Amino acid sequence: MSANQDRFFALMVDKLGVAPEELTTEATFESLEFDSLALIELSVAVQKEFGAQIDETALTPEDTVGDVLRTIDAQLVTS
Amino acid sequence: MRGARTERFDVAVTGVGLVTPAGIGVEANVERVWSGTPTAARDSELEGLPVDFGCRVPGFDAGALLGRRAAVRMDPVSHFGVVAARQAVQDAALDPAAWDGARVGVVMGTSLGGWSTVEREHGKHLADGPGLVSPLLMVMGPVNMTAGYIAMDLKALGPNQVVSTACASGNTAIGYARALLEAGACDVVLAGGAEAAMSPTAMASLARAGALSTRSDDPAAASRPFDADRDGFVAGEGAAVLVLERVEDARARGARVRARVSGFGASADGHHASAPDPSGGGAERAIRAALADALIEPGEVDHVNAHGTSTPLNDKTESGIVRRVFGERPAVTSTKGVVGHLLGAAGAAEAAYTVLAVERGLVPPTANLSSLDAEVQVDVVAKEARPVRIGAAVNNSFGFGGQNAVIAVTPA
Image (cartoon, rainbow over all chains, first blue to last red; front, side, top):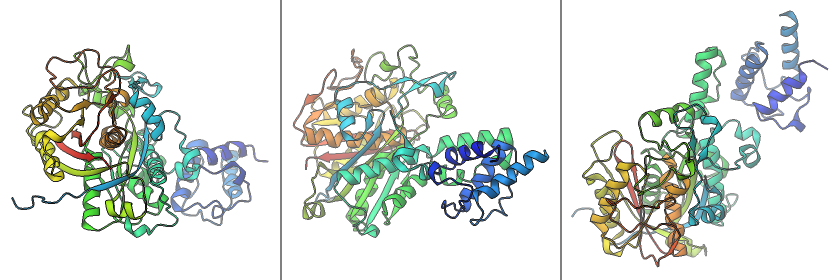
């Protein structure tokens, strides 16, 4: 499991209002009913929490929670 | 006179929703307001400010009430507004799943809208740069959003608007809602006000303006309308919503009618940004306009829910106007002694309290009134609630900017 998963899941619950029971790495943002505003809010929250850049223009409803987590992991490792 | 009414137009108040410092729901509000128990307390979010106390809504969990996904996209002003609207609809025994939403309007008053979100995001912008500003600011900050969220939540799909006349906003909303019903544009209107502006910058400005009580050593005693020792208002937050319908429609569906809104009057002082016109001319014109609209003579009014902010100037000026228009007859109260000044929600909460006073035949007391200001020469209810058979009542609201709005309330 990613070392950042707990923190990322907590952010999804606290800042985006996702119910903890809905939260898995396989869940797509579409299944979580994220609209475009929520996806941008997610990228802002991730940047604030992790200092990691998520390209919100490349983020789509078909992406999964795990996709974003991997992007965070990769940036934190390289930095 | 052109436009003068010859026949009264009443709207029935069939539902009331209240989210105030006195509690969540009609019952909690009745218990606290009619017992005259103040709610002001020191506030951890205001620590270090010149005035560090106010009246918060107790035990309000937006996530639990609205769902966390919805709650994170709304400013607290909309949390309060939506919850109050839901309560009002439930109190009216209306079913949003069954109603013709296109015939249901929403008119909400607010002064500062999603101010606390604007303040927070502005802080982030200055500290961290534009890249960390939330995209949700634009669906949380603007004043119109409370009415918009009520429409989304309850599928109230008729005319939908927010009016903003500072501390008179709630009464203004009720006045316009009544006009929509009279014009036939709606069959039901959810009308009221919401405010959640007890954020540090707003509170600092109010304190700097000298509007707030500085009684930090005893916050519970700080809001004391008409008392000789009053020194300013105490800020509060919350929302109130009334369900309004034409009387015949309410009757036809067998609804319980709590009271009627029978008249509305509005005016501008055209005098000063924050101080009332010392002559009271604008406020008096609004009161007389509401009475004329309701075809009620001043001598028929048994109860006045005063604006009664607990500022030295308002209470002196307002009591002079009340005395001049109504004489000594009406039982006057200011419920701000209990809940503080809810700004854009004040008129709506006090309209709800006026409706409940008329329905219950019981005028709530003005909290903290122990020594009536000698210059206040009206009959202010103090200490405990007073039974009064109310044939007509008036709710006054006067705002910064000199905007005045008054409604007249009569029994069911």
